[in-house]
Image 1 (cartoon, rainbow, N blue to C red):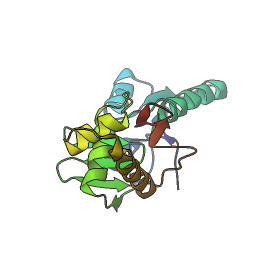
Image 2 (spheres, rainbow, N blue to C red; image 1 turned 30 degrees about the horizontal axis):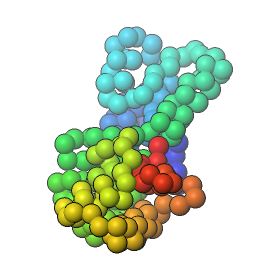
Image 3 (cartoon, rainbow, N blue to C red; image 1 turned 180 degrees about the vertical axis):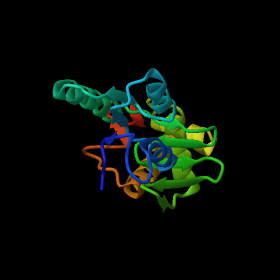
Length: 187
């Protein structure tokens, strides 16, 4: 099930919101907004430092809550770029690439990629705002001089990569084709 945003209270039974947030951040990068009666600056700072994206102290107006939720969801879905969790891990939406082990997972499930598919994905993730022509991709991934006969080879690998990621060509979530120019991350 897809979750767009987490609204989190701090004062909950059994496990407080700060611990929930710490556990959530181990596996997810979704936006988190804390709603709490605790309005001290130290509480807000703690929540934000633990990984919350916003903190709204009670009482608040429903209009302000809706506006903040809309802004967080928009920022996460429309402007979302890959996030480097560490030098070894890159997260793009629900896909995690662990550079240390060369493993790729989506929603926690491992995706088996060929070396070429992995290299293409990593190339795009490490340059999120760049459009790569087929020639750029070929020369970067294969480390060979480009020949126009290689166009179909590159396109087949990208097609297979998209299929394994569950990407829709008409409405791409991960890899976008910029007609006449090449490929880039879909943001």
